[in-house]
Structures are given as C-alpha cells and as structure tokens.
Length: 341
Image 1 (spheres, rainbow, N blue to C red):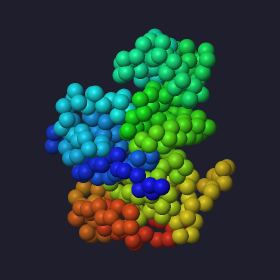
Image 2 (image 1 turned 30 degrees about the horizontal axis):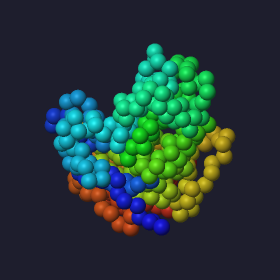
Image 3 (image 1 turned 45 degrees about the vertical axis):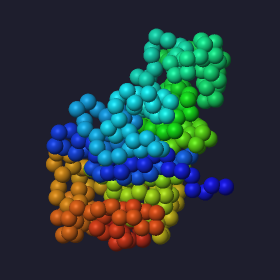
C-alpha cells in the first residue's frame, strides 16, 4: 500500500500583484493525491485570490508569479489557451454562489449534458445519460434532474455544481467557500459529498473556508493565511489542537472549538452564553502593511523583533510556521485572547 501518494499540486513562491501592491506574498505548499487541504484565515487574507491563481483564473489586471505545477505541468506563465484546455478536464472550481454558476433558462440535466459534450464530443443521448448518472450520484434523480435551477433549494444547487465540477474526474478541485449561506446540516452534507467524491477519484482538493469545525472534520492539512502570507501549515487536526502561531490561536479562540489542557480539543455545550474571545483590531490592507510581521500590531506576544523583522516560514516535523515566537505559546493558547475576569 502506498502511504505517500504523489504530489499532484506543488506551489512555490506564489505571488499575486496589482501593480506595486502584493496581495498574495510568497506562498508555498503541496497537496497530494486524495488529500484535502483547507485554506483558512480572515476575510482579506488572500484565500480566494490564491484559489483563482491556482486555477489560472486571476482577476483582470492581476500579475501572477512563482510556480504552480499540476503534476509535471507548469501553469504560471502558460498561455491562456493551454489553461483553458485544462478547465473542466484537469482543473475544476466549485464556487460559493451556485446559482450564478448555472444558467437560469435551461434544465440542470441539460446543462451538465452540454458540459459533457463540450469536452468529450459524445452524442446527445450519451451525454444526457452521463449527466443524469452524475446527478444521481449527488442525490438528484428522476424529475428533479429536469428542473431549472430556481426550482432547486440552495443545497441542491450546490450539489448540482459539485456534480458538474467532477464530471471529468479532474486532478485538482478548488472549492471556494462552497457552503456559504447554507444551514449547518446542508453544509455538512455538501462537504461530506465533496470530500468523499474527490478522495474516491484521487483528486487533490483545496477547500477555502472560514468554517474551522469543518476543517477539523474533513481536511487532511490546514494552511492558515494572514495578510497574503502563510502563517502556519500542517496536519489539520494538529494545527487545530495545538497551534504554533499566535494568529492561529486567535482564530481558534473565536470559534466553537475551545482548547483543553495541552491544546486538545473538547466539545463546548451547544447552548452556551459564554462570550467568545476575539482578535483585537483588524487585518491590514495590502497597501498599508506594517514593518516586520504583519500580525504584530494585533499579537499579544509581539516582541521588538516582530515589529522590525519579517518572519520567514520554517518547517519542523511536518509543521511550517512563520512566526518569531513559535514555541512560546502557553498550554492554552486561547487564553492569550481572553479578557481578564
């Protein structure tokens, strides 16, 4: 049994710039076959820009540099025609707004059949059969498949988009906040479906999300971003149970995943009136980054070097951390952000 599957996605020194302003700054990571990498961080951290850069779909006027390799193929700098030929076949996006990804005037099954024909050139009948089978796999069958998107619930539309994204068993699936505005049960079902299907096909899944409990439940690895850079990366449950960067500790302190003892997770009662801690201040704009560590103005552990020297990511024992104070966190890191009583 191969316990170390191949690296499908290799990212090195990825940068996304708008003129002189860098919004993603030197990001490096790998994702292996069948692996789920969750990318987390506050709004403005650069998560969605990273997702679009991975797919070769950067915003207009953005410049992408560094390296994004899908297997042996380099995507950064490749002609648009080359990247477009990979979309749907080797690269797939699951967007957060499924309704905008579907045509309002055609039945859902017809839209999937059109996607099959555009890539494979099969007959209408064969394409229709594949479309119906793909929808059945995500729990949309019979008369439902012939309905229009506005006749679907939000969860059904998201499942239809997942079915469309996986039609051709792509090597890389990027899901950008795929459960936004869904209720907790629907979120869980969508993520269960997405992770199960991608793992079954050996795809690499990059899941952009704010939902840390979902990261704990579904991800193999977690990459925490702050101000366009990597703050911490490693095995998801280890990162959530015992963070090495103060920023990660602050994110966890503000969720329903509290710490216990040496960083272990425990369940919080469902009905609680406990006020959750928050990270003070707000993330900096890419146009107004502070010197040194971008998190230093908000960090309770910041020292003089944090305010003047840029921390480089360092890897040790399968954990990569960009922090001068790595190893200085207390046993209960969430306590750093709790108001004194």
